[in-house]
Length: 336
Image (spheres, one colour):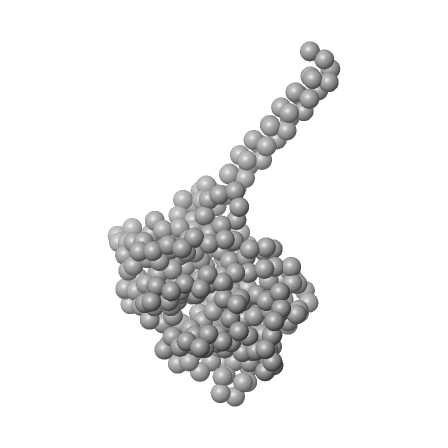
């Protein structure tokens, strides 16, 4: 055997060994392969149901075998024991006893699946998607659904290098818009055509006739309002992302870009739709999430924690008070 052949064989073995070492290390670092966090109390007496009033539903981010699974906790005692299901999701949302699970799908290319579940978390429908899971939302009655995935790039903070795909599904009519980028769009009152249009962060009005969302185009982001039946959208405000409509339909919680620092670019605000007055909230950390309304006075959202996961926080919607930790080791909060 020649020296060149021996060298090639040695190099191949070294590279193979390095690949195995990297794979083993990566598997060991996975949160679901780590030891369970003993500080997280778990209630094993019952399962997670989506029709129980007074319970916050979320994605469990505590390390251990239950990482990523849908869980719930009593809103009256959010620091108390949590119930944990067997359903794993990257994003989850519940409304009117219906659940939407956005999960990464296995395969060589980034892909995802939107899974609709009933009140007992049993699958009733699934939609195959391209991209990396990012946002999931249901209308107040659970009949309308929306999701967003990243199809190129992986962050809104990358300054225009990302591309999203946002879908809307009318469950009552079984009608799917797999990508809403084709909706006729008015920017500042003028019909807008561009190749760089990206939508994300849909939130529905209670009557399901309209929705709000974010659109990015020409290097700017806008809040848009859209008529679902007429299938047209128009911008109403610049620099507003990931809107979430209040229970009474009068205000929108949203994240606003307040800094060019990609590590801390956003601050959560609330917009009064009647006066178009915006109020910065007491949370000054950068919130990269689509907030939810716990009630007419409070919004909740997730923030990364020092343990590599995330926690759910809450803050008054009128700009007063201070942020408070709602549920540790959690993300994707929602409730009936």
